[in-house]
Amino acid sequence: MREKELLSYKLYIAGKDVEGDGWVYTVSSRSLLEDVFTSVSLKRELERDPQAEAANHPYVVGRCAVATGSSIDLATEAAAAAASAWAAVPLERRMRLGTLFREELLARQDEFLEMLVAEAHPVKLARWELSCLLQVYSEESLGWYRQQMHTAFEHGARRLIVRRAPDGVVAFNPPQNAPAPSAALAVLALMAGNSVVVRAPRSIALSTMWLMRDVLGPLLDEVGAAPGVLNAICGNPKQTLDRWLADPLIDDIFYIGGSKEGLLFEQSCVATGKKPILELAGNDTIVVWRDADVPNAAQALCEAFYGSGQICMVPNCVLVHPAVADALIAEVRARAAEVRPGYPDDPDVLLSPVRRSERFFGLLNQALERGGELITGGRRTELDGTPSDTGVFLQPTVVKVNGLIGARAYDIVAEETFFPLLPMVVAEEGDDADILERCIHFVNGNDYGLRNSLWASSEQVIDSFVGRVSNGGLLKVNDSHIGFLPYLPSHGGTGLTGGAFGEANYPMLKTSHLQGVSIARGISPVDTVFGS
Image (tube, rainbow, N blue to C red; front, side, top):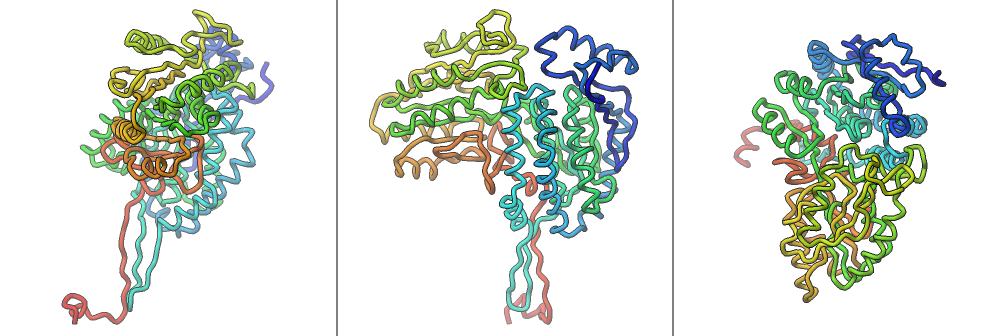
C-alpha cells in the first residue's frame, strides 16, 4: 500500500477544478528502474479503469485529468475574459507576484524537488532547475524587469512614458524533459499583465499541474487576480496546438521543443496572426584558449553530461587551442568518469536513463568512421555503472576531432545530439591570431545560437570574443556554462534555437510590446508641429 495520498488534479479553468475525459497517471521514476514492466502495466490498467486496485500501488504517484477539445477552448475563453481586467491592474501589484512565487518556491522546495525526482530528474539536477527559477525571480531580476516595463521622463510641459503593454492571452507549451520549470516562466507573462493557458504534457503532467494549481493559483488569489487569469490543462500536444492556432482569442504561443517542429510551428503562428515565442534546440560551443584554467574549464565541459545531455543549454561542442588540448582531454576524461548513473533520489547522481539510444550509437560510429578518436565512454551501462549491452544509461562519451576545417562534417559537431556525447575539436596549429579568428568564425557559423562560453585569461582574447561573437542569447566567460545569474537572460537564442525573431528571451518582455506615451498640458498643437 502507498504511504502518501494519491495526488489528483482535474483541469484548472477559471479558478475551478473541471472534469476531464479520463486520466493519465504518473509512476515513480525509481520504479521504472526497478521494475519497468510493472510500472507500464500499472499505468495501462489505471487508464482503463481508474477504480482499479492498482491505484493503491506505491509506484503510483499521481494522476491528471485529460482535456477534451471543448475544455481546451473553455480555458482559452476564460483567459480572454479575464485579460482586460488583469492588464489594468497596476504594474507594482502584478510584480508582487514574482516575489511571492520565489518565496513560495523556497518554502516548498522539498515538494518541488520530490515532484521532479518522481518524473526522473536526478535530485542534483532538480536543484539546478530550482536555482534557475530563484534567479529568474530574484529581487535583482524583478527590479530590472520593472525598469524595462515602465520608464518615465519629464520633457518641458510633457511627461513622456516608454512602457510595455501586455499582448493579451499567452499559451504555454512546455517540453517533456523539463515541464514544470518551463511552465513556471508563465509567471513572467502574468506579471506583464497577460492571462495565460498552460498545457501540461500528457505524458508527464503531474509536476506542471501541481505547480500551477497548488503553488501559483493561490498566489494569484492573494494579489487579487480574477478567475481565468491562469488556466492549466493536460492535453494532447497536436490537438491543443491546432486549437490554439485556430482560436482568435490566443495572442502569443510560447513553444518549447525541437528545431524542426518549432520552425514549422513558427510559420503556422505567423500565418494565423499569433506571436511565436520559441525556445528550440541548442548546440552550444565552449572555446578553451591556451591560457585557460584547465581544471575549471573541464568542470564546465562535463556539464554536457548532466541529465545525460538531454537539456538544451548544456555544452555540445568544445573548440580547444592545440597548446592545451592534451591537458584538457586528460582532465575531462578523469572528470567524466565521476559522472555516474543511479536512482534519481541519490544526491550524487547526474545521469538520467536514455530509453532510445540507437541514434547515439549511429552518431558515435559516424564520428569514429570519419577519423574521430574515442577518448572515453561509448557504451551502455547498468544502474551501478557496469558496462553492458542492455543498460538503460549511456556512459559520458568524449570524441576528439582534429581540426576546425571540416569539423562540421561530423554530425556530433553540426547538430544538437541530446545525448551525453561531447566532441572536442582541436584547432589546427598556427599563429594565435589566426586560431582566434578561426574559433570566432566557427562559433558565429553555428546554425544554432543558445549559449556560448569562453575559457581564457588574456584580456585581449576575452575582449575579441565578447566584441565579435554575434550569435546566441547568452555568452559566459570563465564561468559555469549552465549556471544562472540575475539580470541576464535565462533562455533565448538565435537561428535554429530562436527562429526568425530569435534573441535573448526575457519572457516578461517577449509577451508584451513597447508603447510610447506623451502626456501634455498647455501645449499648442500648431507650435508643436511647426516649431513656433
